[in-house]
Structures are given as C-alpha cells and as structure tokens.
Amino acid sequence: MKANRLVAPIVLALGLSILPAAAQDYPTKPVRIVVTFPPGGSSDVTARALSVPLQKALGQPVVVDNKPGAGGTIAATEIFRAAPDGYNLMMSNTTPISLAPFMLNPQPYDSIKGFTHVSLVATVPDVVMVHPSVPAKSLAELIDWVKAQNKKVFYGSGGVGSIGHILGETFKKQTGLNIEHVGYRGSAPMITDLIAGRLSFSFDTLPQNVPHIKAGKLRPLAVTSRARSHVAPDIQTVVEAGMPYLVAENFIGVSAPANLPEPVLSRLHAAIQKSLDDPDLVARLRDLGLTVQKMSQPEFTAFVSKQVEGWAEPVKASGAKLN
Image (cartoon, rainbow, N blue to C red; front, side, top):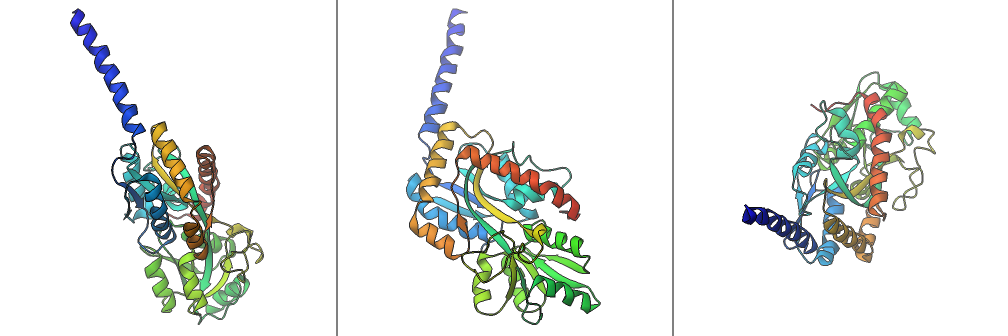
C-alpha cells in the first residue's frame, strides 16, 4: 500500500512538470493558421503577409490553410474543437466571430469563451461599389436609381453571413429598396460577376477592390469607416453620405482554442507584436487598404467582446440566416 501511495504523487508530479516544459518549448513544429475565407480576400492576404515575419519570430514554418464555408463557421468550429497547444490558429475576423453565430440555431460555439483571442492584426472597411453601367456617383443617387428601375436589383457580397451581407440587408431595411442579396463563396467570384455586369452593386472589403477601382472597372460610392481610407482618400465615407448606420470596420486578428497555456499565449502574442513592427508587413497591408493595429491580449479580448455585443442586434434585425 505504501508503494502505491507513493506512485500516484510521483506520476502526478511528472505530469505537471512535463506539461509546462512542452509549453515553454513552444513551438517545436510548424504552426497552422486557418483562414475562414477563400484565397484573395482580406483575411487571406493578411494571413499570408503575416506568415513571413511570424515564421522568423517563432523559428518554425507558418502554414496558411484556407477553409471557407458557412460564413467562416466551418473553420472557426474546427479551431474551437482543436487542442489548445498553439499549433492550430485562426485568422479571426468579424464574420465568424461577431456575425455568423447569430445566424445559426443553435450557435456552434461561444465567440468569447470558446476561443483565446491572441492578437489584433489590422482593421479594414467595406466599400460600396457599382458597375460602371450604373449612373450613380453617390449613395443617394444609387437609391434614386434603384427606385427608378421598377424591378428587383441584385447586389453581391463575399458570402452569406459576411459583413457585406449584413450591411446590404441593413441598407435594404433602412431605405426600403427592392434589392436582393447574392452571396458568393468569397470575394473573388463576386467581383468577377460585378465587373461583368451580372450584379449592379456590392458591399465588400476595400483591399481586393482597389486595383479594379483604379482601373475604372468599378465605381466606388462610399467606404464604411468614419474616416476616409488612406489608400483611397477620394472616396467619401458613409457618415459623409448621411448614412452612419452603415459604419462598420472588419477586424482581422489571430485566435486560438480556449484555455491556451499562458507560456504559449505569451510567446505567440509577443511574436505577433514583433511581426507587426516589420516595415514590409506594415507597408504591404497599408498599400492594400488595411490599417495595422497593436493591442495587448486583454485589450484584444475586450475588443472582440464589444464587437460581438455591438453586432448582435443588427444581425438579428437584418433577418440574415445561414442554412
């Protein structure tokens, strides 16, 4: 009996010493960042830009893995269920954290308690754009044009449950316009259809659309931020257009499964903060219309909580659902 009584404390002590050691040694293998949308969108661009300096900071390969679908909840659910060891991360953003969960019943995860929100990376506004065949040069003119059509007008977004979708439905509710949403599997195919004239207008994040705007393939009407974008200062804001209810900026950050060990969390947060000081990363994201922002880990968690609380009512009011 005495021998048995001694074994348990020894095993327990060994277990307790092994776990912190593994966490302290993090990372010892490649780290994966899951992106909730297809290649080409803001989250994907940010993840790939971040992976370069982050790989140097961590001393291990950083692999970007696109897993789109269901408003980003497929990827988010995978990370929610993953082991909290720091090797499976998510490029978290407004859609799968603040929007999509409110469009599903039951909700697949708790956006706050279900994750460790590690670090904010950047914020980016949406932009309202029209095909050049639409004569509108402002949101007010777009409203007048839609009303004059006497038929349903179609607008697009990067996906059902995206921030563009919610903004579109909010716009519809506030104006009473006869418009219908067309959701795509990512921004790239939606932009293709918009340029081809198969859609009249869209709500989409700014970065991937800047080249098309500069080339004259799409006409921007307003950005959904309170201040004008540094990458497109000639585009007025929705506030200037008299529609402050359309103010919305997508956040892009890094999140992990809940209960991430403190040594791993500290190492990961420090590595991301160091990466955000990389001038090449800052310049690349700035050129694409994103604004790099740094926060402490508790500040980012509080920021996400505020985002979730702030979007709950608009999402429910929009009536948007994920099937």
